[in-house]
Image: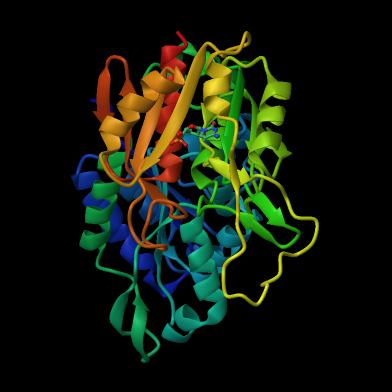
Length: 423
Ligand code: C5P
């Protein structure tokens, strides 16, 4: 078993002293800890004490020439299994939520492809402030794990939520998250510095380098009249996360996206569409591809004809008839196309008999793998639109079920699996 690595980012709050005890507990659990301090953190703890406890170099200066020559911030952020921000001040949470990278700590938080845990600690009024509420909500949407602060008396004498939890509780949370993170391949010594930087320490993903990966994501909107449409609750998050993970593995990624409100992952070519028929056309235009991952929740039906004007109530009390027509099945169309991608993967969102339905779909649609998930549950609690996903990989060889994971981690693992199938 390789040593698990934590990158610990310490920002400048009074609770920073507790990071010393946290490091001690993590080291006792056999974890390697590398510390990064913000400038403000140095007002509360010293690099020397962190260096002694981590038995490692302590990082803090963005412009450390030697490290920067090796593209230090990217290296640092990728070598860890888990990135932990503890304590996380309102300031660093605000920067993270807005993608601000103005020092080493925030730059590597933007550059990392690893799961991130933040442990907020601040005055109760700061914690309750609408800006902090917004930032926390944004971070959760981005797939960041947020540990809720404890309630109690603050260093400033006020009372309420905002206290950093006990280091033992944080260490336990880190252990729980680490159990979900796959171990990194430990053959990084085979790579040159430059390739190691590009590919991260994850060797299996190198198979995707330069390959064309086509991803569909999000819902489709099928117009009924100029103001109404048929849609579903898909957020597009899982598909976008897969596109991001494939691009990080060096693939050339085309992402055909239905109407969603998500930023385009870095390095991904995005084609926005609205309807299923537009999505099919965009997919066909993007071919050939080495891998196609059809994550979109395509509407099965559309209005047979789109009314030119808003449909009005006719006063009789009877609803206007809405004849439907079946949409093309993009996945099944690709499976029988002359340009069928060598690896074709579909998704199956089910509310019951998840695995049985996925197995039937694998055969019916002619693809190589179905990633099945249970989307039952109320809006707001369901996988659809949420940040977590519990998937089952269904292939001709059998079924593999994964734990409930953030969608980003599902994406990373799936991309690794895809890369190993390309070998
Ligand atoms: O049949 P069902 O919609 O459950 O199948 C889901 C899979 O098929 C997903 O991969 C989805 O992207 C794809 N699909 C498609 N075109 C459709 C319907 C579904 O590509 N019209």
